[in-house]
Image (cartoon, rainbow, N blue to C red):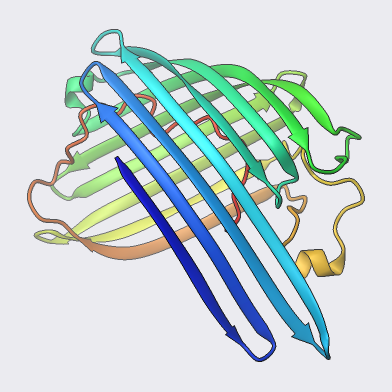
Amino acid sequence: FRTSVSGYLNGQKSYNYTNLFGNMSASKITEDWKVNISANYSYGVDNFNINGTTYTSRNNSTSFNTLVVRSISDHWSYGGSFSAGASSYSNLKLSLNLMPGIEYDIYPYSQSTRKQLRLLYRAGFNPVFYNDTTIYNKTKENLWMHSLTAAYAVVQKWGSVDISLGYSNYLHDWTKNNLSLDGDLSLRIAKGLNLELGGGVTLIHDQLSLVKGGATTEEVLLRRKELETQYSFYAMFGFSYTFGSIYNNVVNPRFGRSGGSRYIIMN
């Protein structure tokens, strides 16, 4: 079990920023069961003073996620996730998501600390209530969706590789889809010292919550609203130092870190 509450404040003559953030998480992991529960809340306020006029931007988000997985055999498992959340940035008053699924690992789970090749299929129900009317003239809707994820990971003396390819779409319109590729590479430089490289790209065609009428220049600059895009990407690098075994101590990698969440959280 873990919980934390934090706050942040900074400013100058013409600008100040305040952020409050809290989270709670609990998990129970055995060879047969995996249970994860987490909750997060974030509230941020930006104030800008330009030529005597004050502009204020507020963003808040809330999320609750649960994941329960049961092992069937050394290769198969089944389970499901439930999430609930809200986000002013993504125009979500309330988004609920229930996603049962089944997973197959090419390698036995007993070898999962050294290598994995997992295939996860999930399908579920996503009722959504919006703050404002969307570009599709919706204030609420009941969505059905499914997803397929392939994840490969290997740990060797030279380092480790972790790659994930995921696809999802809404069942009422298969053109509303999302395709993502993420990868991490850890290269051993010396005993315990590793070079960390990572990155990912997402092709986005499922932004159903965008506000009708778009965003004003002020809303774009202050990042008040999610904007239409067809892709996103990221890249990172760094160094890490590890004590002890090169193999991690995860005893149940089933379903990865799946939480079923479909909304964006902006801090």
